[in-house]
Length: 165
Image (cartoon, rainbow, N blue to C red; front, side):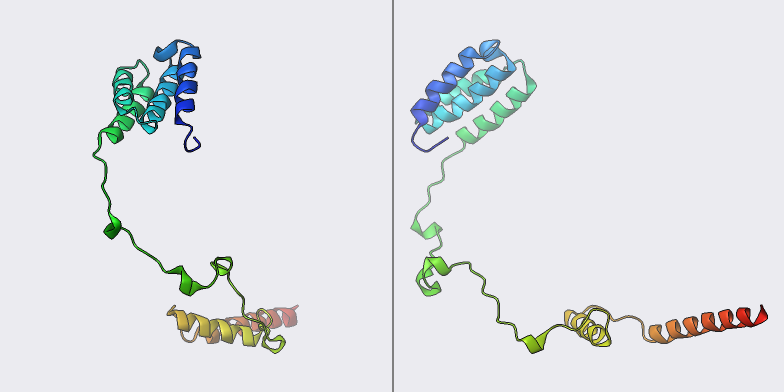
């Protein structure tokens, strides 16, 4: 709903309830009546809204009953009375003009500062340093040596097989 058009909303939802199949007792009419109650409350007619929602609490459709009970609970809740001391003031004047708020400005890139090619030795060193900085555990020590031995063994087996043939 647009702010300020609550009287129009009350009129339109009243017409919708009347035009719905089964009127107030049908599922669609029950849904419209819950919306009508919210429009009544927004228009300052809270007693009428509460009365309508109490009627909807005995609606034949369980979904309409459930929603009307929830909305009625909210309408009956005491209104919060908040003063200036309950709000936080943020001084945006120190942040510059509003056109600059929330803008991310990338750092200018130096062409000599390009990242290393992926999977190059420099790339692996850089990744290792990033992980150490983030506190992620490094791979097991000696894992590279173990991998090299396995590969060397595989090459040796292949060489032996090729000589045997």
